[in-house]
Length: 240
Image 1 (cartoon, one colour):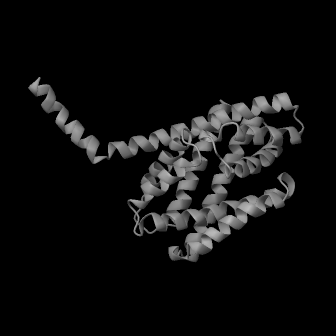
Image 2 (tube, rainbow, N blue to C red; image 1 turned 180 degrees about the horizontal axis):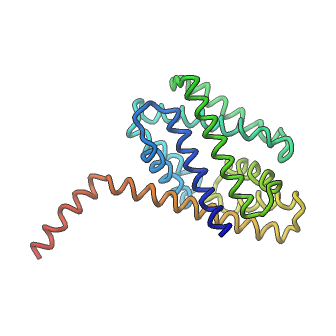
Image 3 (cartoon, rainbow, N blue to C red; image 1 turned 45 degrees about the vertical axis):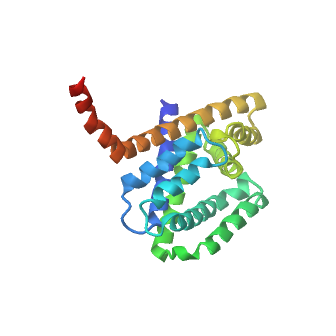
């Protein structure tokens, strides 16, 4: 049961992230649409390397947002920075602060380059709240798998940092290694740490697939192409 609840927490973390993107975009994007589009990117990330799912997310959001993909890219840069800001308090006990300087500086630069986004202070505040919610849900999910809050506070920053250099589908290999090192630093023998890291990654990936599959189902159900197919099928049956 704890693994199922952990999967729900990981899916909730994705929903919070979708809300963070939505908070930074112009009005008109519903919560369901934001989660569906974000989820499709999560599903794609499980099979595509180099954050290919993020490209899909930006494309899907860009189709319904004024300003297109450029506006979405600006929102993504701001939300990514908000996530790192909420992660920084953990760096003192979980990671050397220097480990966060490069990604934080890169994200800050992205925000400067995305000034055309022109978000209001309220939108920035909302994004920070959603970012905190996303990280909080992920911490609870890791805690349910590892059975320790202190271990989760080590593992989550390690996973976030490993996620910035993802080169494999679902970050396979890299995520398990980062989690195992963090768990070993927490006191687990390396063999047990690696086993726990593999289970953790499997549960988180399952949560991403479930969330992304639901999002893909929502988009396909509203797809004009699918509607035309459903409308034409009875005609085919009649002709047969």
